[in-house]
Image (cartoon, rainbow, N blue to C red; front, side, top):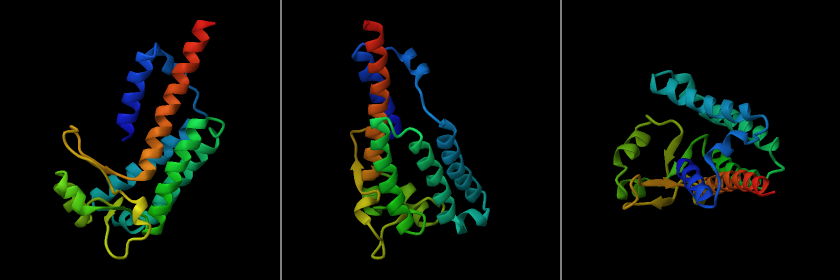
Length: 187
């Protein structure tokens, strides 16, 4: 969802008269908190895939740390309307992940229906530590990965309401940057 959000926003920004080079002047306060948050999760997923049990056993704490870093980054950018939208999405995902033992619950049947059977099996078999299949013990299931983007979309996917808010916030953020730059050029 995030790749699509960035790509769509850049295209729309260009169609509105913006310039891709305007992005180099984007101001993202304390950007390294976002980078660290993603690095913590990426490192945990990578190490778990290599058989390091510590990461699988401590996914709740690892996800908590990852989200804490994201929340700090968002806090420093709270003056931006776009980051308030991003906050809603991050918070919703945080809630459902924490309520389900540190893993995002995902609708397995929907994954199979859109051709993501291999991913569903990897989650079922514990090869993907960040997600878990929904079952009768799943808490806050309506905040989990239950929304589907099927074919003919070239990359079918399943995502959460939180992901939608994050994607919308990133889209708005890029539009704010491009619009601000366009206004400055017209003055």
